[in-house]
Length: 415
Image (tube, rainbow, N blue to C red):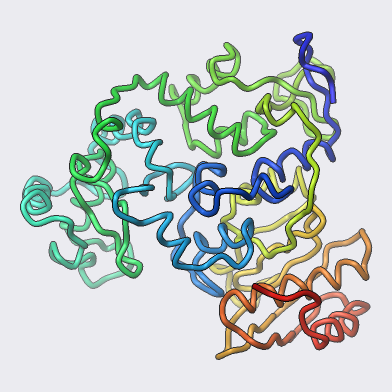
């Protein structure tokens, strides 16, 4: 890597960039995994939420992927606890965010308030719902009249539309859940006073979020940063200015093999941005071997996953069954800092079922088989399964070795 002390642009190989990304995301080296789930949440900056639950819900899988078989109650406690340690809001998607980031989303709350519409028209009952939370909160949608009118999932009741709009504009906040139901409380009661008192401009919000995105991603293109923060229009222009002015604290880098920046004059032009702290030392240490949620920030953006890992992946849960290639909830499997394959998991009682296993081309095939077996057995132990069964294997030459490796059981004690 180029020494930045002279103000030079760093030149990175694609492999160096990949290892920096893995360390930044908490998959490489013990220090990157210190501090448990709360530190993990601050490190990645945002944990995407999703309703699908196979082995576990995605927000649990994100913590497990980095920390190993951490207690699931510890995961829930780090996300939804009292006093508030995190809150739910719109970042890359619906995400759990460290509570310290509350002031940074003022720009988005203001935009929603000005627009007064997102997926639905805001109903007249919004003031009544706010008063109900003020007098009786914290409340769930069941407490305020239910979430649906009885039709499809998007056929929300007026009270559900109202409470979600109040969440969008920051009058209420979700800092905990009961089961999988949001609990809504007045922001003034749930968010620490020192955070509520901060009044940041849109520029300040976007600049600081760009810094967080860059630190979380380690090395990122401009498109990666926009995807993480989901800014557009004038807010995307603020992100660009924060990068070019240096206000975001990220430095330009050239990553060989990554596409040239759109409109750049030639190959010598920087094509990415990096957290300067991530460039200070070579990433070293032990890699995690683990299945990844498709919603994990390591792989959640398809173009980035393909650029960094050569992984062409999409969630097939909403694809008709007969058209699926890798399975309903195929999880990329990380080992040795690379994606070695995918597994579509399920549970049947105390058995983790690998409905379909596929291997990526290249690399050490025998090593990939052992790593896949390790990943399956550790995940099984974490969710309380005592057996692993493999149903289909997409690579005929590796089917017998994988079945034999799984039959031998875990190679190391599971925790």
